[in-house]
Length: 211
Image (tube, rainbow, N blue to C red):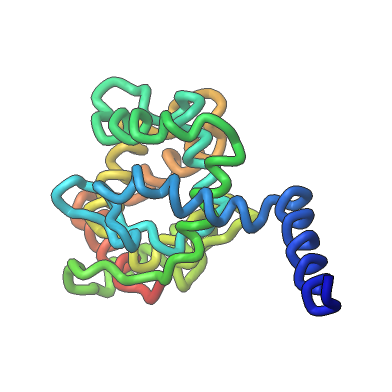
């Protein structure tokens, strides 16, 4: 065997061992393949599909995606009466049967370029003021989220989805399960917005922020 061939073989062996030991290359490849089941609703680029009610998820933090996928898998999400979107998502993610698959999909989505939602209502001072007074403590004044607090990015997310999520927290479709501590916190905070107009103003402001 020539010296160059021995080097190439050594590099290949090292890559194979790294994939076996750490799983990073394999996880990335699996994530791309597994994401195919998400494409009909969330789009090939994670841009979201308004007709299905699925939000734009491209570039969403992996830690948050894993938490939500685990919540669907365990029934914390998607099992409440009337939560048709959550039930559909729970069914769609049933193919992700192990932690490794959920982590791989989350890593693939997190690596997709972020994009701002196209449909944003006019931003008002009311929305900005209430967002900064109530939401920014956890989600940040830039709406980019805070992993240490378990608060996801809101900036640039579809306002239709944010509106539906807020309604779900208020109704108990989300945040009512005993094991959903972070959801319960969000449910309590959602009740601090005084009226429907303010809710929509806050949503429009969050969606308008740069993702």
